[in-house]
Length: 244
Image (tube, rainbow, N blue to C red; front, side):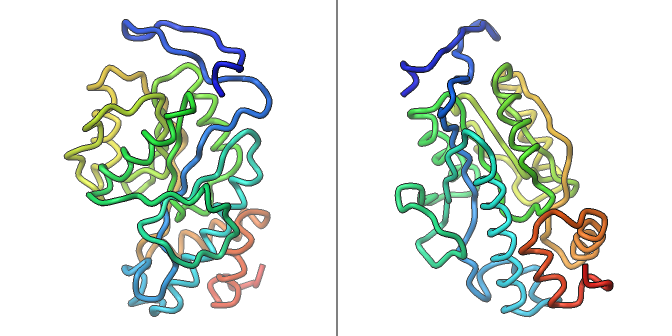
């Protein structure tokens, strides 16, 4: 696919790399890491607040909104990267459902990113729990990969909601402390340790803990046009006082 694209070359950190192809129709894989939204198996830290069913319903709503954002972004290939087969609340071509495989999150991210890079000049992985993620964020990430080796979008809790790379050597993400306040910084430093030029996106919040529900409600009240499925869940569960 890439040989038919109009490409340029640049020299970064002692090596020459092809720029992300600008030809209309080129698809950069954007891989959503998500579990089937089954009660008891997703958003477990929200279960004390929402119950098993409520946590699963919120997870499903955020998957719907994330997938809609991808579908609305030009020139991306939406991929659902899942831990196991299951029922999802979105329609996905079977060719675009990829199993993450075994190992910790670093191993699974590496596996999906390398698969994406087999026929693309860049690859992006995102979570499904950042309702404030927009088309503009994804387009900014794609632009960043045109002249950077990697791009990262930090979450305000210290993790990250987006990671994009132009290459993914073996072991790139091994030994990262996952699910801590140091995850994003450790990841960014690891990329720099591999001589990668890293662009950072604006930070966003994600929804993992009961306190994040208040942040979510406040955001949706200030931004009435975003995340309609998540908004509908919040309204039906009385998290938006004025019902907007």
